[in-house]
Length: 146
Image 1 (cartoon, helix red, strand yellow):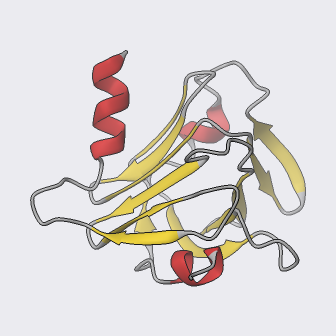
Image 2 (cartoon, one colour):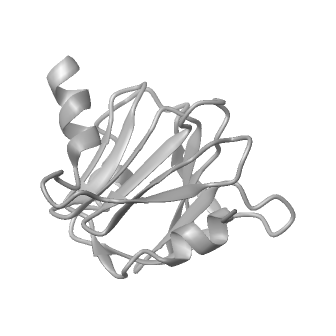
Image 3 (tube, rainbow, N blue to C red):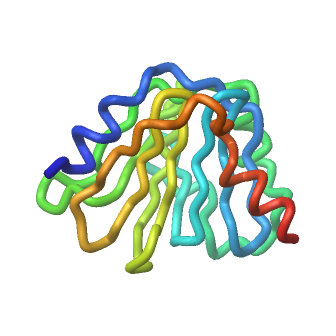
């Protein structure tokens, strides 16, 4: 059994952000070799203040666009009491938090080495990635389906 802290902590950092997209339903943040996809609530804070969140229906929010070119420097469980969901610390002091509310895959984090599929019931199980499967396969499925 592996918890979110261990699963997320195994991700190789830093992760360069090449895209940050919100269409009002799906948040997709990622780069060439990694992808975070979620339909769960999320928020972006900077220095303790709310910048934007899933409640903002404007998919072209400037704060999300400003993440492109930045780096994720730390991934932590956002709560030590119930370590179910991730917080991604950005090199400018921003923090992207995901709040898993779905019982089936509230968020999926894929990298070249592994995929972490969340389960709001816990625990998280990292899955070693097959060599032929691209890191952003979840993003490709989402784009192909729309």
